[in-house]
Image 1 (tube, rainbow, N blue to C red):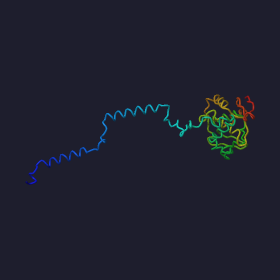
Image 2: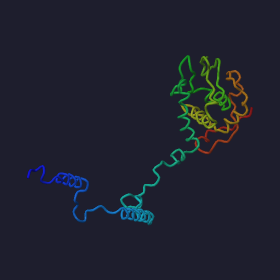
Image 3: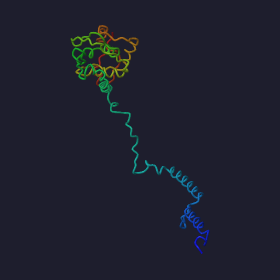
Image 4: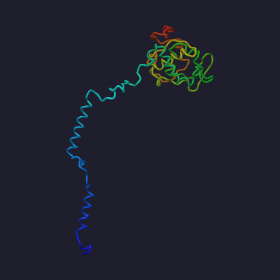
Length: 239
């Protein structure tokens, strides 16, 4: 009998058997996939156990372990070295920083620029009465001015600083100017600056040197804080 007529269904059986083996390979005993209900129960148990361990006295907290001691708040404390300075020394320290605004013209040395900007070192304006000096700082100065016997007439004059700087900032920088570059003068406080600011609240124009001559030796009334700055403080002059 020929192969074509021996078993007409044998080829079909072989093809079906091969397809079944491709779809589901034989697995060894014990390696079958776990049923879905068992996987779901195991997931619930893991979630519940994790929640209980996480709240058990912070046992798993990194900070609670000896290998990770808590370093506390790494941010710097708000209290700095400046808080330990007396009022005069603190004003001098902060005034030195604010003087950068003035140093562009009067120079870091306080000597100014000959023929352009008057000096602060040895200046009768810096060492004279606080009332004239505060007015110049708040509203500026324009026109001819004589400092240490030398005439100056800077175009535009000195610009006002009252809008840019607060009372404390102006007090600090004036205290610094009055006690730097070889100068020696009384301390200026924010209360003094505020008194002049209030008195001249409506003024918008710069001062002329001649208009300030009456304040040349006047000190704004006010207490000077105890400390080195008070040793040179003179009583306030009355106008």
